[in-house]
Structure formats: structure tokens, C-alpha cells
Image (cartoon, rainbow, N blue to C red):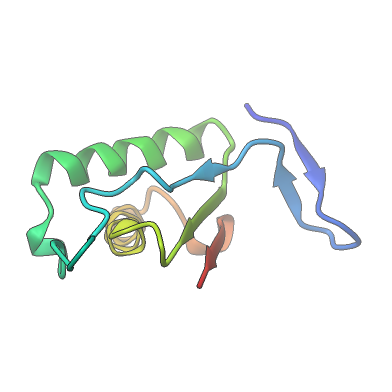
Length: 101
């Protein structure tokens, strides 16, 4: 399991590794949006993302980092988390989700 450290002056246990999601997208959506909904994402691509998040969580990496500028990363992560939440594999309160505008 990945070790954690206290985050600043809070009591949040932050893993020393983060799941950076810049490359977790099917498309950068440039120059125009290619992926506008989860239905536009290949099933194999999305299933791989679910497996990656599941494995990271099992290893103790609960900090997920993404950004609006990362193509359709936010869309795909949201759908992947919904799948894992509904399956009861991960709880929302067990994650630290960071996004940037």
C-alpha cells in the first residue's frame, strides 16, 4: 500500500502518490470536441480506466487529479467513478478528487 502523509494543517491523509489523469482520455477534444458524451467513448477505453482507478484505490492511492484542459478526462473519470460507486467497490468519502479549470 502507498504510504500517506498529513495534508498541511488538516487531518487529511494524503497518499504520497497521486493518480494524475492527464492521459486518461480517449480524446483531447482539439480542435473541436470529438467526445461530447460518454456514449462517444470506446467501451475498451472506458473499461481500462475503471480498472486503473480500481487498482489505484486497492493500492491506497485515493487522490485523483484531473483538469478541464485534459480533454474528456473529467467526463470519463466521472463515469468510471459512478460505475465503481454503484458497484459498492469505492465510496465517495474515501476519495480526494482534485480538478482544475
